[in-house]
Image (cartoon, rainbow, N blue to C red; front, side):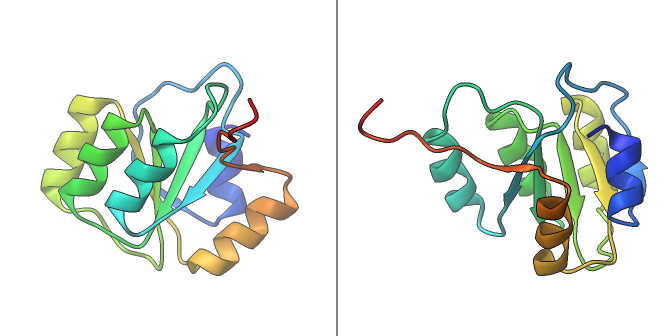
Length: 127
């Protein structure tokens, strides 16, 4: 899925567009409000997770900083939340796109699941 398709699917507004898209498009969704949990989950992901979309209800600079650490380049803020000016400035420096959707996390996840986007694939002990 590309950014334009995502924007249409989630009735989202693009607040800041980094201009770049992964070759594979955005095909994986991570829904998280706790940045410590995001770090833990992304620390356990398989190497082939690319094009990850972060869905979050948080609108603070830590979301940008944490996303940069785990190589997430597209953040969708839920429930029509808007980023602060500091968030937009950081996103610009980090190359991260920010969108805002009126949908809740539950609805956003459901809509993207219907469109066949993937969950983050965690490493198992067997690999």
